[in-house]
View 1 (cartoon, rainbow, N blue to C red):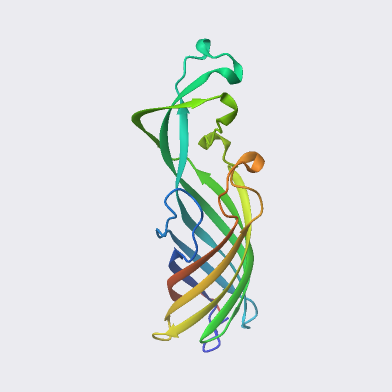
View 2 (view 1 turned 180 degrees about the vertical axis):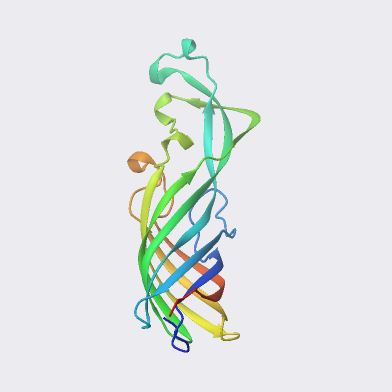
Length: 209
């Protein structure tokens, strides 16, 4: 319920998460993602339950495509012929958490479900050779853990623009619970830091006395 009226309300936020650290992928991206959140106040108090959606871009990841004729290989003594390529490492995330919400600040704690998004893999024409098959590590996107999860903590500073609108900056700490690749063959960071830049709007809900 609103503190100023007897009508129920919720808040909806549209935000852009920016990287504050490098995710340790090929291009060490600082590209923006996008997302939205919906907050539901509990009993007119500062405690909120929230959920939403985010699209996170972890940058391009390097992979090599083995184009060797397998009939010409003799175990680790053979030579692999490969093409280098890249693909974007992106996740769709759905958070669920609790927020303490005040006029000029808020703090949040929760968990996100992460779903890897299938991205096109682009390989160049240049051929490279690897001597000894034991030196070949396959970072195929098929080895990405399709389902993952992360815990997060954030603290936001808010600037009220009107009774219904506010602007916020929100540093967020994220820890991914499983390696990005099966077997932990990669070095993609599981500990990350974002800065979320967002606009928040209070929505008054229909209410019958």
